[in-house]
Length: 315
Length: 249
Image (cartoon, rainbow over all chains, first blue to last red; front, side):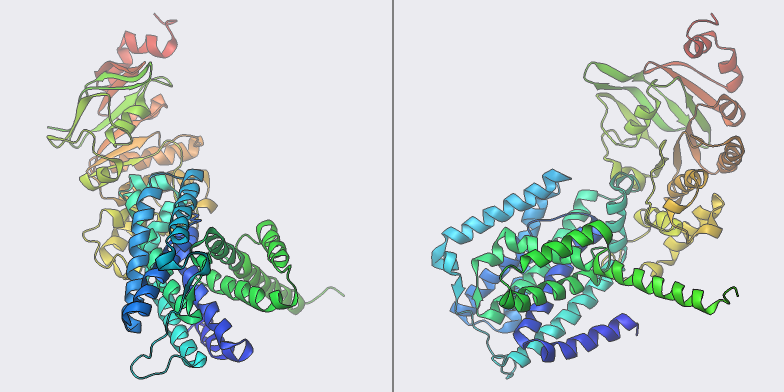
């Protein structure tokens, strides 16, 4: 087992004892959301500013079914993944027709469209008040009302998502998406239907977002309107960039930094987004690869210093 | 027998006709060069053959089948692979991954596309390594494409085309920007590929063209003005006029 895996499992075990289990749960949920975005942003080179479309849609649909039809947790998660993928298919199909700035604006505009539907459709979504009373039913006799039990469930799903995402990025698909990021024209010329592969990345990313959305709704017992807003879409991009979009683990670290800051520092200091802003500027100016790059550079610097101190110095 | 044929191929961009009424016939197994001054429409012709954009009029036949209007991403699957005039590789990929991506595209099956590890496709890997070995870059397989020299990038450019295991290779100025020494190596490489593939070659350097071609077509202002064996082209007065701007006439 690689050291990253050991670190990760250790983090999963230790986290609920460091921060409240609810915050710990939120961190892994946001990490699943980030994994989905990063397939687009880091691997395919597509900056989607509309990921909350899939997150929110899934949370609303599954939340509604949980609330009014008392469906079980697995079914709710399945619905969430399905709604996330389907909404991503719809939005992605329109977005991949364009590239660059137009692509980004399309993801954003369609996000706004979904947002206003949720805003207006108060009978279902609760509008500005959010969809209240999303239950967290027992699963196989296990009581999910207990925050710690629910945390264990969420962290297992997170590890499963990470495993699945790793399989995807190490598969031919992962390499093809990276080839598209590197050189779209050549990827097309060697025989890949580039828009279709981008769409596939969207659908997979949407499925991850949907899973995260349902878990989020069940965690807080509410689907707030923010869950489908562009602010939420921006947050996940932000978190992923801070963590490092170039690596599989970037969005996980980013999610940790982002949620931890927003939940703990915000209590002490209402201007906490200022800290995020500073972190973001530092990342953009000095560490394009985010925390992951900063860490690998530190390791390199450390080992080169050790080498230097081992070599005999001149008298 | 002609493997690749065009019939009255024309491409206009607004008022400019970049390719005008070009009818070409590329014999299977031959090395057919297309020459002409800058702006003669050679690269546009390649873009038409590889489906980058559809022709304004005219038809393209590959192996007797009409392939006019086939999009670029289907062309490689038919057995036509191209290299680009300007180096067009995957910079952050290792050389092996560069050719692997091309080899996988035209591989036997895409089973496991979403979850099987990339090194589990032995047939693809073999083809990728063979393509690198053909251009003499196998010992640098793990270097990143952006870190090798320009000359090596040109070789990689060729390897990506070879990795698709094509029937027809379309090479757009493979020796562009190479030093005399690198050019010699590239010529030897192309000569080595002769016979294994049907090759269509665009090139500016006359000495290369004359020494490797079986047949030469000359383009000028979008039209074909001459076609023949190298000796015939060398003697052709119209070709000289096109190249020397009428001074020789």
